[in-house]
Length: 463
Image (cartoon, rainbow, N blue to C red; front, top):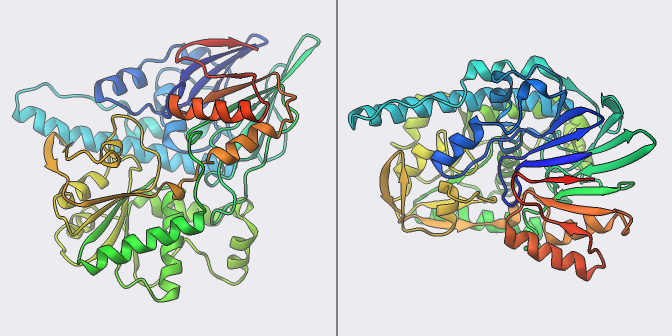
């Protein structure tokens, strides 16, 4: 059995791992790589394998850095099954269509500028029509029910607690008389987050392949992080500014809306809140369809005829482009939550360019930002940034709140690995930058866990 690390190796973007066993070729994740523009297109467009020769795809969850290159995979010849939980299949469908739409719209905008400079037009990686071809390939599988992926290979989805429908993937591979169990963590969530069940720790695995995004950072209490979020909103409102939040439309947006709902119930939220993402509204409707993913507190809300992520007085979901543009013509205080989460595409770019040079405003970064993205540049407090080819001075206040992350911090990552009680033959760290991985390796070593590898991009391991 071999694993090829084609994405999210020594970085946190573009998850993609090719498993070869029993003559079968199984792709685990098919995410979009995000980074420098030229490198991004090149890496996303060119697979290091023939998509048509794959036997199956396994998808841990719907975030674009894990699912976003599926349309390109299908476009280049893949026609086999894509296994995911039911909620992930539903979310991935709308997210991939939205991704195709955004890529088409952004290319249209960029090509206008390129035409003005006499430069040739560029093409989108894939279109909304390409993305629509993915949905018929989904084969939804319930949590905790093993299913056959290929000859001698079974898989099982287990709660990961990261976003709606997210799962770890437990694989059992039979090669002759040899049985190997691989536990792939996907993105590991956190305990006591709103809406979702807690992540399940691994068990009965020979190898653990796990993310290490925050391997160098123990997270603060989510309650304290949400209180800090409330303080940012109040502080910005007092000086008459807008809070601009780049946020993934699925998961993070619902969590932020829930937090603002608590402010509204407490009577401390006195500014309007706009979720400027048609995708977020669609995602919230999908949340309603999948109560099997909720924690007990959220189920209690439902039993009382409420839902923490749907609506409250003062919240409005923006759908049309005209409504979105109108927000930038208004001067009064407000909160705008808009995609994408790393500020690389979509309506958030227009909100940033219209508000970034006003010191009354706040740009709030609430999650990990990939290198070379606009979100990373803002998080690193660069004084000037480029948006749609134009240079802007960053005069707005920039605030980062790491405690709002839906990823496990160092403490839970250590507990996750230690759950195997040293029985694992090896632990493979992926989906993390070098600093985070090295810090986690030290933490694991101190806990007596030493069989840890951190593979280079585009290398392979034999298990």
